Amino acid sequence: MDKKPQILHRSLVAESRLFRIESIDLRFSNGVERTYERLVPGGSGAVMMIALLDDDTFALIREYGGGVEDYTLTLPKGAVDLGESMRDACNRELQEEIGFAAREFIYLKKMSLSPSYMRGGIDVVLARDLFPSKLEGDEPEPLELVPWKFSDLPELYARDDFNEGRAIAGLALAIEYLAGRFEGAVL
Amino acid sequence: MDKKPQILHRSLVAESRLFRIESIDLRFSNGVERTYERLVPGGSGAVMMIALLDDDTFALIREYGGGVEDYTLTLPKGAVDLGESMRDACNRELQEEIGFAAREFIYLKKMSLSPSYMRGGIDVVLARDLFPSKLEGDEPEPLELVPWKFSDLPELYARDDFNEGRAIAGLALAIEYLAGRFEGAVL
Image 1: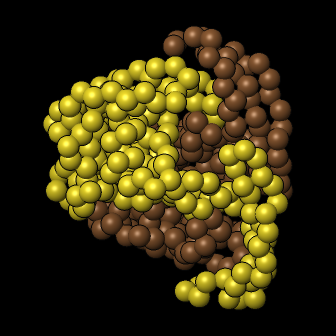
Image 2: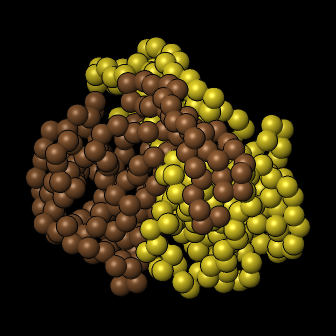
């Protein structure tokens, strides 16, 4: 099982404006053959930020989720533009989405959305030493900034409108980092 | 912003064996119009389990991820079959993936993979009071069971081969539940 399956064939089976779907024929090391499908995102990656408004408070945004067709609370995030550094992407998204820039960015981890069905992932970054600074984004309507305290996390987890797995995960990593149990890297 | 956007038009724009992609034309309450795309999963839902092997140990599996084209560590999970209860789906997947059944299942939360781009989600369930019981699954090769201690979580978070956002999130919810800070519901 340490030996990766052999890729027999790979093809593009469907494509839309945002998504590409690849089909991949695999032969596992035990000889079993299977056809897998995966989503291949376009672009240069994505970032998600735990932005500290003070030592115990982080920034949530309320935005319309086209996938679930409802408003949800989640962490600020967005796509990295072509040629843009991860730090610049973080700082641009923060200014567009919550109206703050940051002086310090700590890289925490690359997370996969679904290792089974999706290539690519999102980079999780802690932002602190914030100051007001606004940039115009491409949102169809202004996002609402919702400050939330780490000490009130269980109430957040219990809300139906806070349900994005990656956001729960990002906060868990930030808590471990802030408690000194998990290493980050200054960007 | 409390008023949801109006759905002007909805159409299927791409389809493969596993995925369907919908395009949705929206008019936000401020009059701005946008076209969104989202993935619509097939099937009857999915479950992810934090299965307690003892009070401080949960079950990880090592499996090949077709999306990232590598072996990764994650939590046991799988699709709910047509007509199957969530509890039965959890118990079947556990027996197929780690060779244990459970006597107690606690429902924790429905998580979305991406509220922006995906409909549907995965139900997170804590399983305990486990006993050996094996069912044959549809895996192309046997999965490896990797027991992991909650006290060693920071080491797990630091591993490159443990990167699924939903798994980090599921563990965070289980920890809150076990500490009595988050309510679950017996299945």
